[in-house]
Image: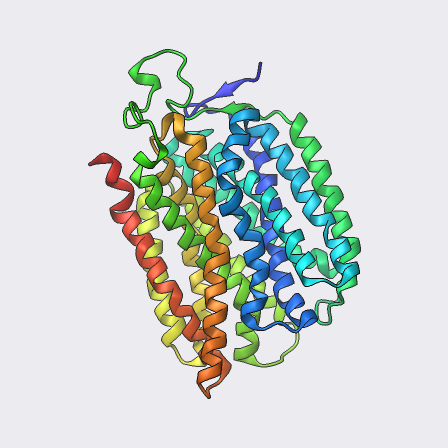
Length: 418
């Protein structure tokens, strides 16, 4: 019988290190997609909006397979679900080979979608696992540590691909060898996780051994449907908007830099700036939560900073606007770590289902950048202005996103207490 631990567990360092590797893998997949967006646009002569179908292919899997992911986790547990997720992601990676051989953009989208299915299951497993494995008040600190691992992989992905591919002049058939290598790594990780010392975790009230008030979530007691948790539903929308505005800088920064600075060499280096901003914010979270700032207060502060960063990005003169995008990245850093524990608080036995629904909100990473891409195309078509102005017009989409996240931080997550 597997060992099961709850939120009062203090011996979680080893499991957390293992899960940190998984967050690195998730980030590596997103980093690859950020590289593929401009590469496939060039190879297949796509418009800006069409190119963001690359991101949409990955993130649409979250809304389609988010709910089934909960069923899988409930049936086989967190650890085995993580193992299965790695195998599905490996399948997605190996599908890049026939996509490259056939020089088919739809096949590339299919490969990305399959990888997204594995990513969905992995996200639905690792995020509640990190939240539940220790005290809830320090969940955002643990999630910040995981975020550092995740965003380091964003930076590593193009470096890895650069060992095999000329990032300035990408040839599609050059992706075959690196994706074979990534497939092998994912298979090895899946096997490793299956045998790793990862105990199952249970949220308060999720698995009641003795019917006592101490072991149950009083808010969840008596509820019969996940739809009876309004703070979770608001959290899903907050996460939807957040993932969209977190993905947007990574997906657009190289194009925005090109529009701002022209065809200068090594434009891909700007992608690392997004990672630097995020990691700096995560380090801030590790050092301050919960000793100096609560995770709620951190979410409020960084949401306000996001609003101010957006105004700088869209209203500043061209030569300064680009740096607003870097400040946006710093603003985004603590949002995921704070939204997640606030949204699944007090779900009790509905925790696994609630986590899977929350994961569905990650589809915002497909929707927001896609809308942004078509807004940029639309603005280019109607205005005889420099293309950088078109990008600034597209970035207005971030303002209502930050405004809602601020609402969730101030009031939305408190609905369950009223």
